[in-house]
Amino acid sequence: MRRENQSSVSEFLLLGLPIWPEQQGVFFALFLGMYLTTVLGNLLIILLIRLDPRLHTPMYFFLSHLALTDISFSSVTVPKMLINMQTQDQSILYAGCVTQTYFFLFFTDLDDFLLTSMAYDRYVAICHPLHYSTVMGQGLCTLLVTASWILSCASALCHTLLLTRLSFCADHSIPHFFCDLDALLKLSCSDTSLNELAIFTAGVAVIVLPLVCILISYGRIGATILKVPSTKGICKALSTCGSHLSVVFLFYGTIIGLYTLPSSSTSRDKNIIASVMYTVVTPMLNPFIYSLRNRDMKGALRRLSRREIFFSK
Image (cartoon, rainbow, N blue to C red; front, side):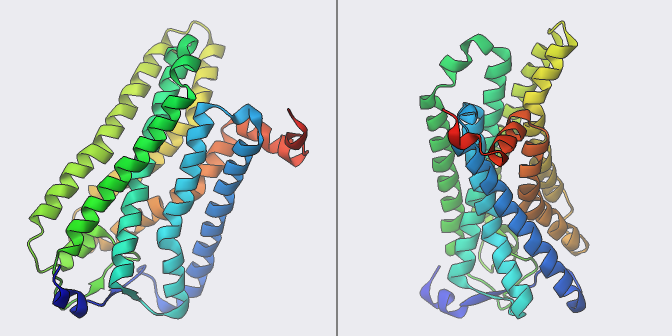
């Protein structure tokens, strides 16, 4: 992007949520409560996994990184939205907008890769239980998480660099509550064909392929479970996957719903609602899903409340 374009576009206007001014106070309190719940709930998960030796397993290693990602993911968009609602100032600096776009894409991609790693972990645990401790060693777990961070960084950086080369028209109003990449491209006066190609390519590599891997993993898990003769064995196997499957459905369901909506102006409100679902609601629900549907987490929470964790060896 040329220097004159950067100086002419010093800031954007985030139009925010489609709500009436008199409803701002109610929604501010609602989203503040949801954000605090997200941060505290995911911090509790990280604390439990850190303190309880019984949770020092590959699945909870991935879960701790997912919890950290969810905190960061919400923190990219929600605090700025709350500040805008409270101050009635909708502006965001050009540099701040580009930075928000980068970190939004980064943590979205990281969520995808971590969910895929967790699906592979469940596949090995159920389909190859005798080799689980050998296959899912500390080295492989660290490698999967490191690769997830590197790939997410590369993908987000690619989109961000392509974004900075664009010129923008006179209208700098973004019809969203954060700097959405698609909304920014629609404001550009430049040729965005390269950006759209990058979005398609990254979408296949970061969303479609991980989802296919998750579906294949659970397809094989399902086939293995059907071979289990006892109902008790089936219930035990399903209990280890239920929490992860719930999070996968929440995350990918809202993303698929968002990107299959028509791009007409009448769908803008639905687009924002879908974005709220996967940027605010899903990270908030994850701690409840893993706490209420997971016996290990519930046990760790009980031991923490009785302070048994601090004295366990």
